[in-house]
Image 1 (cartoon, rainbow over the protein chains, first blue to last red):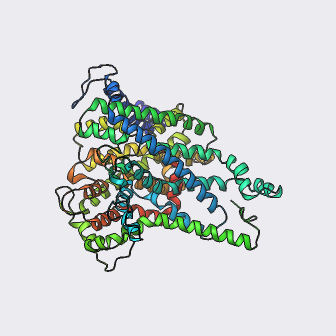
Image 2 (image 1 turned 60 degrees about the vertical axis):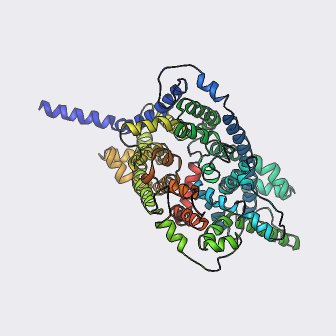
Length: 299
Length: 297
């Protein structure tokens, strides 16, 4: 009798707490693998860890080292060039294509499928393909030479000054279709009544888009910006496949810098410090975004 | 959605508008060529002999179609010192992707369900904290993860990668399912509770079947992300446990011997085929995942 009532009490207790019991292992995993690991990396960035972790704190030494390493500045310069060009080109192409596709086009579905398929590819595949297309002797250079410009020279891929732009070319090819899809969804959600009213008021197509529709889809610009800058800051695969960070370290980015210092040069402290810098940058972009997303009513 | 009443902005008929529409199609067509060109170059190069590659143009069709490069890429090309082709690495990727996708999708569904339909104090905070995990740059967890995998003897194995992809995919699948279950009426769950159904029964017989479209979105998203991953693969595996993306990169980056561009291209297409097939078959769900998972880590 006693065991039975205890058993029922236990069942009730179990049933009452079941949701928490189900969620807690996953929550615990995220506490360890996300927050615990971030804490570990931050801690290591304040130690003088080299090949092996060393748990003695030394203050900002690794950050001082990082910010006096020429290679880190190359990585930051590249990040700046890549991010700004990548975002601007993707936005311009994406918005342009979205507006064209918004004109009730025949075969729109097929065209959209073609524009978007690069997003299904791995950056390694994209990098491999563009590495071949941009090949300094057999690629585009040879085509143009064959068209009657024998002096045409196109060797950006192996030119330390220009190589970073090849990463932009491949990156824009892969991601601009995605931005198109984001904008198209935004344009489609604009109320028809507004567009009709504009037409009745005699606004031409250009004016209608510029001063009526685009201001309405402003949130799309914001989310496209967040998505693209996020992609840019973490870009690692594409650089590795296309240039391997080279020539030399001319196309290094923070992500490849971190990987190289962590796994090839075994300078854990400096690698950790660069990873923390990346986290800070992403968080600075992401927190306002998360805030605005969470304030929006649930979808 | 119902834009049938008015047809876009370029509307009235007339010669000027016909020309405008022609221009519109010409531009759209040019961009189609732009996006398709690399795929065309890859396929055509992979079907040429090395000799023809050196004599012909990048954008010409192969004069003589040969599948030798495909055969070599699949079963003979050298990845580092091992000349086995992509085959074993392709298998590694399959062994990695199937359990990682299944586990992370199921757990994400359970999680999203518990956090919305059995809302307890703090559920929203837990969700927000877990969501953050999908936005971090993974560089910040690489070092501790490598140490932990080493500590548990999982370093350099496919099992380690399954664990990593499951853990970091979970925040994403949770997001997908939470957004779906939030829109499902609580009344259904209440009615089932009154009928005496418990937590798991309601989940498996009622809500999980309802969420089929979300399951498809989550599975496709996870599959694409995990198959295409390079960072975790290159950081946590060595040699024969590499996933296909890492093996592909090793084939292409190898600097010994004659550069076989046709083999590189065939290998790249082989590595891309699974996700391309998924995209062609289920593009609608792929796009939905992209929209929801915009800011993936």
